[in-house]
Length: 266
Image (cartoon, rainbow, N blue to C red; front, side, top):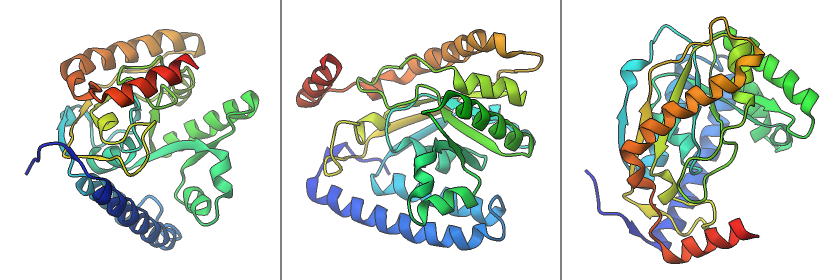
């Protein structure tokens, strides 16, 4: 049942405490399960349950479309725009595939959490070293060949104004290396649940969110020189879908808009 969007600092605080506690608990459970089957059915259920629980905690009204474009028997790279921390649980909850993500290698050194990321076959990348980053992408391509579906937020960081950001090339270099189809993913509305410039006590509850999967785009026969063409094709697909529900991402908080302008101007 949907609710009218609203804010509550006290509820936000309680939700953050509950979300962190539940995430910590499932991290420990995942560590135990991951020793046996990091990509098995049980782990998939845990990940989906975590994502669904996070979205229910903020009472998000989620609409999903385009699932029919995903072939259950194929492996994909899902390339998406990025709006909020809630993009991750959203995709975990509603993508009919078990997903893995690329993350900054520094997270490997976070006690317990880093070990779990490694154990569950998430993919570290050294963003400060171009040569090592390329090597990491090649390793990711090998994992994709092993049947692992990867999601990449190709704009690299969360949007500040709710609009789409330019995509970086790394995701498309990886897709060409792996020679698997790309599913363009469009997210709209999570930016209003929790904006990048807001603190965790400023969650919007009951926000409407749309998650859309476009038909797959083939990388068969492409070579590294085609990365810009592929990037433009995927970006155009996402931009076209975003037009249909970009209204969910319009920021109408005057104070937040001022923060956005100050940040962009600094």
